[in-house]
Image (cartoon, rainbow, N blue to C red; front, side, top):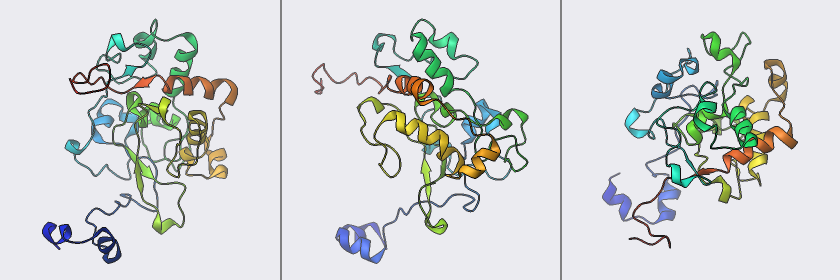
Length: 248
């Protein structure tokens, strides 16, 4: 099949003959699943390296790392990350005076490690680093509120042989988003934040999650604080657009 032949076919014909050239990629270790991080990110955060598999896409296909951070409330500051990966060790230094105390607490929770299916303190964890035993942070996958290209096995599709990998989406612009999750079934940022922590972190298995140390977040305060911070994450500026959103 050539590109010229594809170009002469209708969409229905391409679908029915199953010749679309970009089928969903299988997980690099399908039965095991879980988060897999690119080597570029592992160089900054060694605790994310797994001993059972490696990331399989070359760096030039991946987003810029580390991603810039723009805030809807402080557009005048530009990239507030200053070219650094935001972690629990530097978030206060970078954002104190820019965020209010509630938003700072939301950011602290987003950069705090929590147990996850492959990154935890149990004997079946997939990391050798003791630091990785504490789990992963929300901002390990959504680096600086964006994405590093890290992926995992879709947790809400069954049966097993039909599951595919899903790349971590950016959190930029969630303040104007109305549906969340790979099934588009979650209605708010708070719902999505809570779901990720309770289900996606543990492949939707509550029994395993309990064994591995699931941390239940309080919906009324912690989840709300995290969601408020997420809703501040803005798209990069578009300097060629005027104030009316038209090309200058």
